[in-house]
Image (tube, rainbow, N blue to C red; front, side, top):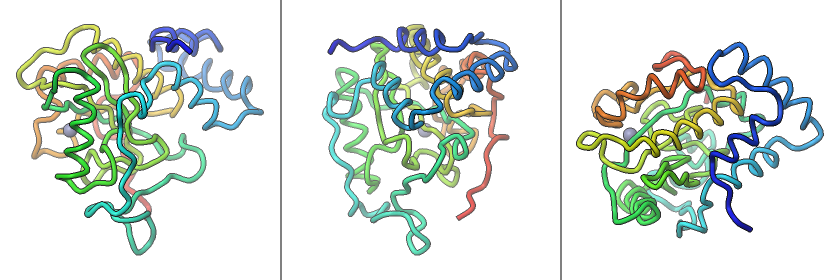
Amino acid sequence: MPKRTLNEVHTAVEAGPPHAPAPVTARCGASRSGARRRHSARPQAAQWREELQAGILERQDWGAREPDHDAENETGFYGPDNPEGWRVYEGDLRAIYRTVVVHHSVLYETDDPGTMRAIQQQHMELRGWADIAYHFGVGQSAQVFAGRPLNVRGTHVEGFNTGSVGVVFLGDFSLNVPAPAQIEAGRRLIDWLALRLELTHLAGHSDFNSGTDCPGQYLQEVLGALAESAGLALGTGGYVPDQV
Ligand SMILES: [Zn+2]
């Protein structure tokens, strides 16, 4: 089956309930209640997955490895005796997520899929995590990639992972200005996430962890525009400390 572009997905999402992208009130009022009514009989996860699958490249299509649940720094599954473990969120993801955190990959291989594989390899073999840290990748080709499953906690923003969606833009934006098409692909993804997860905030990685300059100054400069497009506040103010 031919893949649709994220643009088409975005349009399809908007084509359901009336949805004006800019004003927060219109975005929330029209889309949330409408979407819930229209799809109330369908399981949330299945509905979202169907929408997402149409616009992003799935793990098997970029050559992702299976998660390693023996990984040194994310050993086994989350529990009271293993708070750092692979945590699968229970229940409605809208009650979990508040913030999207934007990163850059720094490393870049010859193409986007190769870069996703390299990031995953680095995270699993050098960082000792069970999987790639981020939930989504945004390529220089404007393709969006599925990373760690959205119903699993990421490992992308130390101390603030619970309830934070991780989105990585592929490239080094300390050195390079991101191309308009890549920004646009990221914008559409983040708009979709904000709408579906009912997010409140967008932040750069360095806003939470001051020891990094991620996502690089040239990407940091566009975070305000990304937040505005999605109707989100910019910064860390939406984070809710984890209740373990
Ligand atoms: Zn980062």
